Image (cartoon, rainbow, N blue to C red; front, top):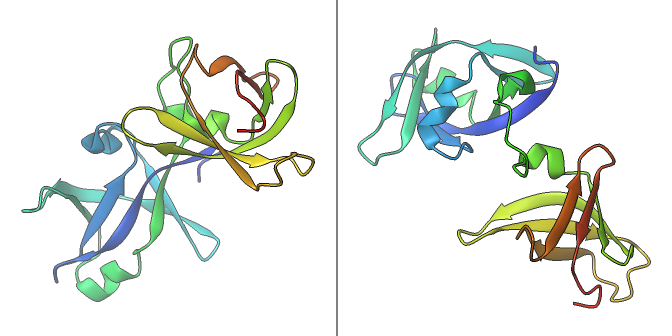
Length: 175
């Protein structure tokens, strides 16, 4: 069981009739998910170790896996929609200025003028730059629930302090 669980992907559905499963990797390079072992899944509040027999790309160039002792479609389907989880200790240490999304979620976001915007609840990859989804504070003057703030370091993001869980942004609270 992982001490500090991190979701690296998800098992989406059964593939074929021989117990293979489609997976979606959340790692930057999809196949990098296989560098992090062991995998765990949580099913009905029980942690299960996942022992991979094999992985490959299918003819649609999508990742598929074969889990030890899963021999048919019905058994494979029981794993559909389960997250692929590893312990955070397996992740490489990042350089200064680089962050894992898991470390940003839950941080408070405030403007450079110390106006409290809210808390990071998600991040979205858009292709050009990542976007923070911030659950707006209840006292936010525009009465909106969520703010979308581009994660552009230097221009919008002025400081990320993981020790205090505060992200300083140059952002108009009325935008």
